[in-house]
Length: 163
Image 1 (cartoon, rainbow, N blue to C red):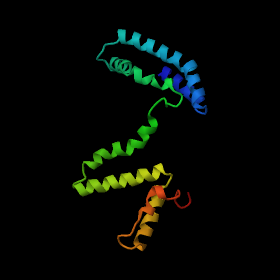
Image 2: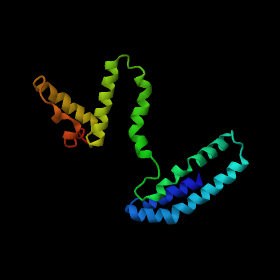
Image 3: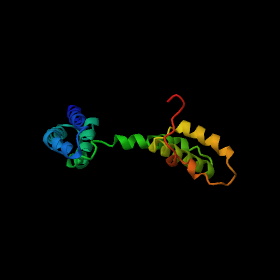
Image 4: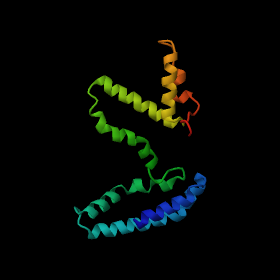
């Protein structure tokens, strides 16, 4: 854990730097930490039982090493994929709930719902305020009329009341 903490400490210092400067800092500060970490993993692998929990963790890390150290090659690469993980969490969380979409139309409705909510988030539109706006506006429109102007990416950021 101390190696990972040290790598993240470098990233914290490099966060506000331009990618070229971040790359230089990683080359100077992160690569020696990564090398020491890899050396520690090799030594640990030699003394741990392969099927023990720690042995499995060390083995997995060594097998994934080329991916782990990839971020130091470019100052624009993030150290981890936490941002992507946060964005897909609703999908991963919803997977179990989707098992209960009894019909094809129910599954389609869920897909539309998640698409709209994530499009709101991606466009800086507060989802609850957006839905209030759309559900107030739709009844005032003629049936069958074009409602594309109500899509989240066509709206200025809508904030919730008091927000």
